[in-house]
Image (cartoon, rainbow, N blue to C red; front, side, top):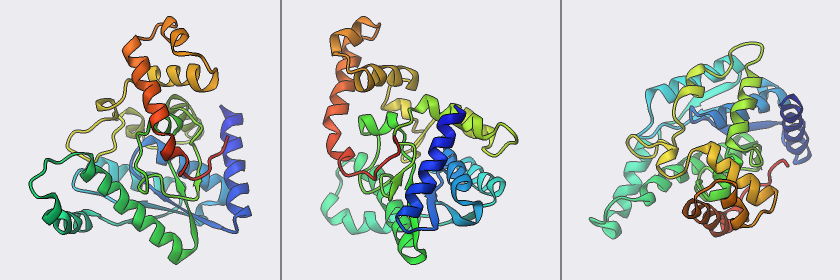
Length: 258
């Protein structure tokens, strides 16, 4: 774990500086992924060169905002809060003549993520900071991410880190003192783009997903062998289908560290 963590720190420092940047910008969601990326960035570039931005929507929990603020304070990084609710409501109003009474779906969820991407890129331009995106390998593999939204950025720091390892690395970041609040470890992972949403509404448990991804992506095992390893036929077909279907997203994402 220590070697992986230090490799991510070194890779982040090297890539950011070779791209001509000294400072970075991270969208802080209150979740484990953005918390880990913030820790890596602060060590790689120094806390004074890292800005964390929380952008609450109508579905953001007070705990997520508070956890982001607490993390930023522990790291000693700059912290800003920009609510996106007014922008979200205005965008919905603008689109209403076309959307009419069509039922709400992932369109409204993705709109929130893309508004956040818009704001992060504006701050990036204005303050000459490289945006670090925070998607992990498990999410990006199956497309549980928003193109031009949370995928915005110049470097995808943990894009080759499975979700289970994210937690291990986050614990490593807390090895000497509590930097990442304990609530970030214990709360169910959620994009918070609709009421009471959790990642497991759309995905199998991350332990299961990571195991299938390891067999298929890293060990290049065929579906039949993955099923023989103890995974249900329908689930294997669903996950492999999502991996293949979402290649178009990964083709457009920021480069990662691998």
